Image (tube, rainbow over the protein chains, first blue to last red):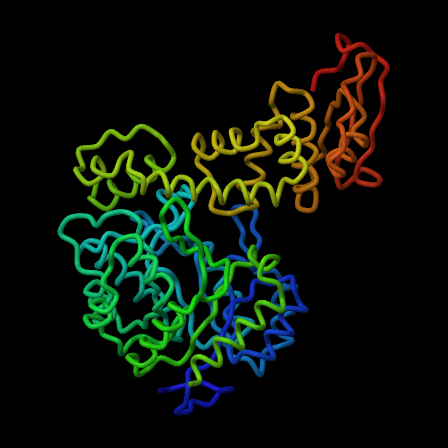
Length: 289
Length: 181
């Protein structure tokens, strides 16, 4: 099992990461004591007037205080890599600024879309797993790989809608993308549980079919159920079932180096600083066994 | 139109409760499903949250009027909404700034001016039918909003070039004499 402690790759348990979106320097200092990586959210750290986009300098200053020794990675929600017309150029401006200021180990995005012809759909939707989408995504992944000379990872998103006809399987689509582009993957244990609950996904079969070699990062989180759906709102502590699935993934993924506990900044008041720190300690203990 | 474009445009329309005229069997299959309802609810929930965070006073006033969810829903579904919360909020406030309810128009314009002032040289002129300081204090403290004053109105100037950023003058005119906004 490859792990990153400091800047040194070691054969050990995976490193631990968590999310930070800024404006809570007390939390930042506390979690910095507990993790090896900080996952920066370019969208959440930014401001825009609709035409210009800027990572808030004061948030970058907060991050600079704790890094180094922490490794930094970026994880976006706003690129909309799968929009039929174009991706979000504004998000790339944000990434440019982060890369100018920091040495990021890798960056990642969701395999989905949030805008259609420039209009926000209000949520994130997965892509139909078709050849048309495969071509579109792979071409854009290659452009990202050319632009930023660090690994790029894609994360699967939960699916509420039924499959479109003539789809690849969930794992088959990810395998095709990684085979064509060489990009990495983030697996989200909680998202897989959502798909199991909402869609009846056979998670074991998914993992058996998936090429685990490109999996570099694993996300864990807690969410909520609403009107019978399990939703990927990262608002709570990680459940025992999610942790159990995470350990199964860790055992299967030979290149997995980081486990990230994700939470939305909107969930901080409910989770509390103490709760977040306790959760990080709990995840650390679980993945170190 | 590619099948991907057709599906994405169709899903956008379904989530925003717009008319979907399609020959796509998959879109027809999911239209009206509980899954699409859930997606629409999630999308609206986030817009309610974001606008509440960015437009606190207008959101509070709309809640007092019992119209917050209805107005945000109408805005989200009826407009090409931005993925950026700053622009989303300003577009929402801009739409309300010409609302026929004079109090709602004044509060939303004032909040828009406060958001834009740091990055704009514009000067806003806002007509209030009651004392604005008392209105904002009431919204801030969740207290009772003062009633409209029949015998006067207040004209507020807001802008980066205004001393103290805002000045307000009380005019003891009848509403019939009020200067045009």
